[in-house]
Length: 96
Image 1 (cartoon, rainbow, N blue to C red):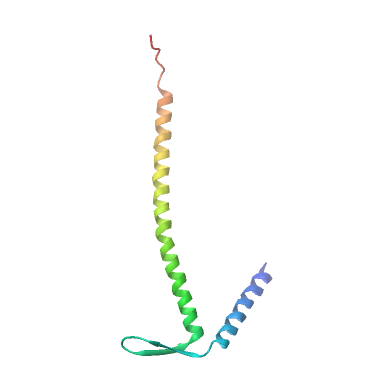
Image 2 (image 1 turned 90 degrees about the vertical axis):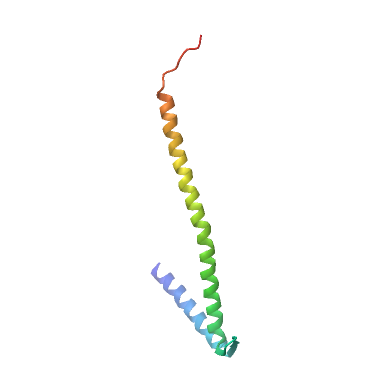
């Protein structure tokens, strides 16, 4: 298993190095107050990282809502089970 993970990590690193070598041309980014020049590969990695981070943030909002709903539903089930146990303990009355 260690060998497989080592091969996969090495392959990813080699692909990243090849990507950065093939995309080393400088790219200018114009802002309102100035201009910056970075290699294309760096900008692409930065944009990918920003996309991953914003995707994680967006999904965390949904995950937190679902956890909150799950906790409420578990509490409701617990209360319903307690009520059911109490109702089962009540003696039955004959209706005449």
